[in-house]
Length: 379
Ligand code: 13P
Ligand code: SF4
Image (tube, rainbow, N blue to C red):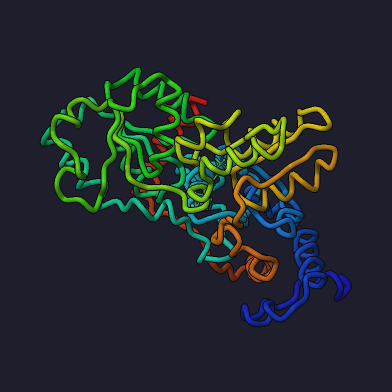
């Protein structure tokens, strides 16, 4: 073997921070070349272009979960996204059955930067959800409530759903998941994103006065009167995405006034007032597919993360593509994943000294996979 094919010894992170993009690109490509199919790099649509260029598969949260679930043959997954996504990948690719079928071998899942969290996921802690469930039980029969967690949540919340007959949803299957839930129970507790819950329930014809918002910081029934809880079919956790909260109805009005013929296309994590004014609402892959299918000359103002919109703009010069907000709103935690972190984590993986391994404990994973597999069966 020539020395050019030998893996370099992995270095402390500070070493990679000092390298230029061209060298980092070459070293990442070299690891990929040497590891071949033993390594899989998954990338969410919100990732930076330079990182996406190295991904074997790019997708939305749902597609990435499915992709991870099917990666039995590889040894390691480098997840270019945020923490809850890497947790989900670990849970789905390392079920006890899959690990047994591989002779006890786990697929190592790494998150190149551990600081890549999700502020929305952090708005619901398992202790708060358990307290809310107990408090709800003092007013309504929780046997008639299905807990539904958005995939943007910690594994412990997914496990809570698994244990209580509940399910996970993503932005692309929330409607099908709520249909599943309402076929079982009269009510749903939806966390942590109130907007996805509200927007989806309204599209199903559930009136706003049959929804309430649960504030986990209000010790008095989450800030609700007993009568409101008794009336509610959807109990929405008071959480939101700080990126999508930046889009406002007045931004829609301004585009309609200044760009005749514009179509407004937004993610369902946006507030109801924005979704109500939009032409189309859907997940990140819905947004990508919709624009790709539109005729040349189409005009769009898009309300989702900046990197996705900028990439769309570059890929579709035949269309007019604008960012819906006048201020820059990008997901700062998604942006934590950069070439330096990717190269650092890959060279450690290759040297069998993995860093930033995401490993969900067995008991949490056992229940979380129940809720995740219910979702995968529904959609
Ligand atoms: P999707 O990938 O499901 O569209 O969700 C966007 C998001 O906020 C990921 O964190
Ligand atoms: Fe979380 Fe919002 Fe970033 Fe998605 S865009 S990872 S919901 S903070």
